[in-house]
Length: 306
Image (cartoon, rainbow, N blue to C red; front, side, top):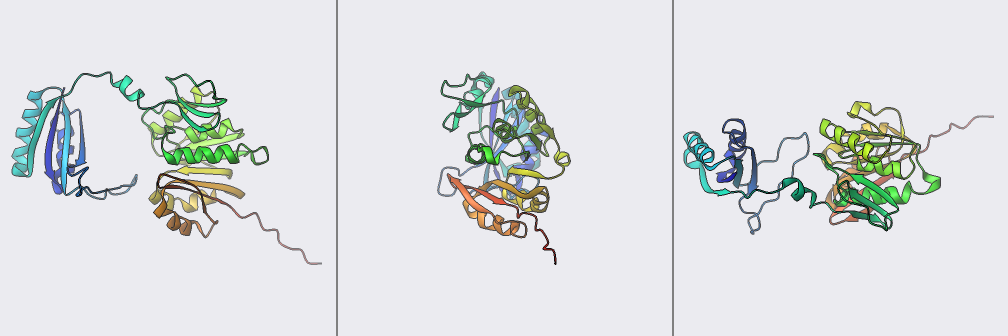
């Protein structure tokens, strides 16, 4: 296997990447900032389901091929279309590796709170773990290592772990690997719905529910129904804005909403979007990320005249 590295201008990067996979036999292709690690590095962030924000001024396109001959033929074909706009940087062999072992090595057991651990399915729980979530992320987001996930789990440990606050119904909206839904089950929630727009996430959540021997109702977003005591949504800022009426419409009076996937600078804007329904406050923060939580107002009881 070989890796072909190309230097492109921004206008061509995505098209070159697509052509490598769709027409030229590449096993994979990625676009990176050619100036990464320098003063000229640019930070670009996109949101799921939204138009991409553009490409870097100078982009590196990397593609994997079965052999060097296939990579060289791809170069010829690319230059027929883009000529000097695509420059070859390198064709380098890729060492054979045990990719499964390499991937698994990235995920070690993670302690959330004392005694509460996230443990990948290929590891044994540490002896000090009294409450465990076994996890096989598959192709879905949610390994327990990201600050946003840890903050949600810490909130569950502190809030749902209290006997007087144990929820009857919980919704994990944008469930990814199902880690938050399983966490809610570990802290005694009676009924838990986990939904995601990605069928791969739905399947990963079902797998992890079986691994952890917990009962979840898992499906696409339309599977969410009725009202919930707790709603957790660890997504990103733009979809959370769009989902405000949906999420708040599913909250029980007095129910609690937990939002994550937000940078510190995005917290105030999200709180403003949700203000017509409830007041959100920053209840946790870690490494530049914040956790927003709020409680829906209780049902107002009309006063009776005498």
